[in-house]
Amino acid sequence: MTVIPESELEFRFFRAGGPGGQNVNKVATALQMRFDVKNSPSLRDPVRERLMKLAGSRLTLDGVIVITAVRFRTQERNRADAIERLQELVDKASVAPTYRVPTRPTKASKERRLVAKSHRSGIKSGRGKPAAND
Image (cartoon, rainbow, N blue to C red; front, side, top):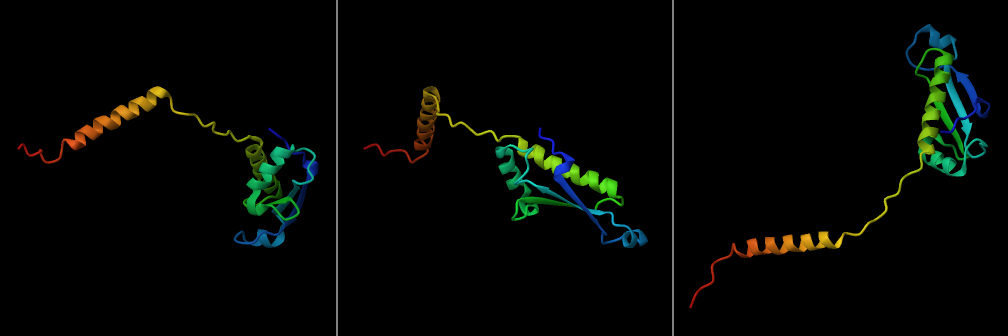
């Protein structure tokens, strides 16, 4: 598990839209957090590549992940929410994918398949009209 130091994160607070009454109009509680994935020294290269793929539309052309948190009414909770969401992304990217190793069927399984096919063939051929005896 890779932990991102807060010194690599950039925070910007702004006023949130939507419901909330006068609080929304007065206080800048919404947060935009930026994390420069491309130039981060705390990530290994494979993790960096997977993180850039996982980020999707949150990744800018400069290689910066932008996470916006507006769920809560306080700066502290929005900040914690954004950091937690980034950490979840990093944790997902830290897990290397497991690749399937293709295997071949065994000789016995091939034999069982052929026996079953011939048995089924006999059942189906027995359903036809009986042969005319001359």
